[in-house]
Amino acid sequence: MTPAAEPHPEPDTEPESAQPGPEQPGPEQPESAQPDQLEPAETTVETEVTVRRIPRYSRFLIIGAGVGAIATFILTASFPSDPSVGFGALFGYFLLFGMPAGALIGAIMAILLDTVLTRRARTGMAERTTVDPLPYDDEPADSEAPESSAETGNR
Image 1: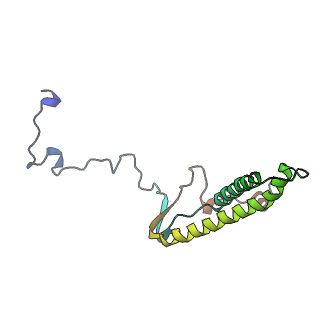
Image 2: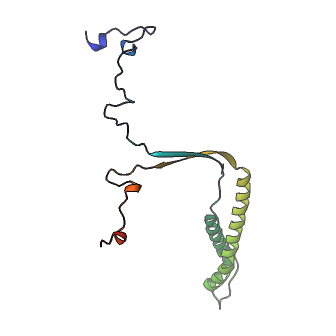
Image 3: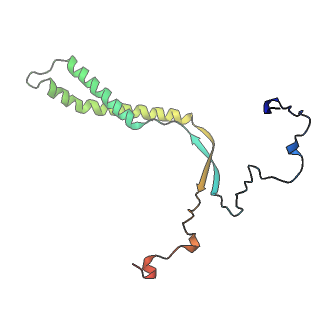
């Protein structure tokens, strides 16, 4: 018979491989496994953490300064300028006030948004796992570490 045509055992009966007998090495116990083989040290710590979103203040400051510069340009262009000074010099002068004012408004908006988002903060449990790697086979253990060349007199 072919393997596909072989009859399958009934669900109520035990398969032949499940009957007691001599233990064979399974996937958990490979034949080449050594009992003295080391496992990496693993440490797991659970901590309660607060998760919340925060605004990026630098982006609010930059966008606020940009909006301040655009508002300064619109306000400077909407009024007639003195022909002896010129539009460029007048715009540059008012830009010294418009950009910091826009950045200040952006910072205030970021602080208000941060206050709102702080109220929506959630707490939860976080698990931190630290795994210390095994030393290399050719690396000496701590107790077998060679002395430094200054102590032994070698150069």
